[in-house]
Length: 376
Image (cartoon, rainbow, N blue to C red; front, side):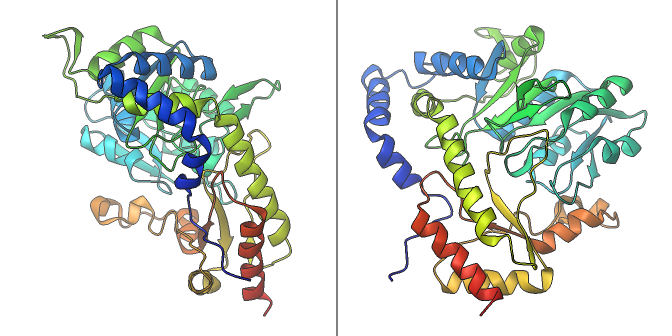
């Protein structure tokens, strides 16, 4: 049997499947030539707000900008500390440092890879102003106890929802809320490989607080509410009309995209369940999972050798993340901090191909290759 053409993310096949709708949406923008702040941006913001059940969505240039805008809007005191996981992409901590605040790196749960309230609580002190929980790889942090903790200490909560758009959190009463809509502010990315991705860069901030929303919208537009009148220090961060048009088409498909990812994950889970040296993703009982990444935990002695084996058989894989943030050179002041779970995860995680176009043939080929490595 010939080797399938397997990609970590297959945006080409997804585009081909949605080509008529996407091409028509982009043609509308090209015809109108309103490339910045066109009606497509407003329409997409309104449709995304409806999807989330939030009153306000402010689109912006990318997910990192979304996090920066959120922090700028909160007007935190100088020297404030912000708790953030170490096992995540750098943007969550990067914006804290860029704005002159202090990141306080937290460890994570060994199974879900997410922050928990009991991990966060010992890190809170009089300088703590906010928490940035990251819904890593596609499932929610357990937000209910975290929000109770934040309320107890008077802290802001900014959800980094760049990897879990469309996931549902189920609270103790059984009520479902979309990931990113539980904290005071939610942030997301529309980087092409995300579950809802555009054809370039893009992001959004969302909140049910109209005062915060108004402030965020102004900050994203050079601090302007009225043109050429600057009431605050701002930045220039915009989602262009072409990207909004693409996203508006894809938003109608988001639940289907996530269902396709869950189907692929179910296949992986069943096919790999009997291999003692690996642990398939653990789903928290209070969250659905939208599998932005499908990430195994592999016994460290096998991880790199398994990855080499997959490469030889034509299967891509990735390590998200090879070095936790508190061990990165950019944060050398934290080099002596010990966060054992984050460090162990960096030595053991391995992400397999995960996207909306995976076929049963491709999934079987990947699973068979992994099985053959452990059971030659």
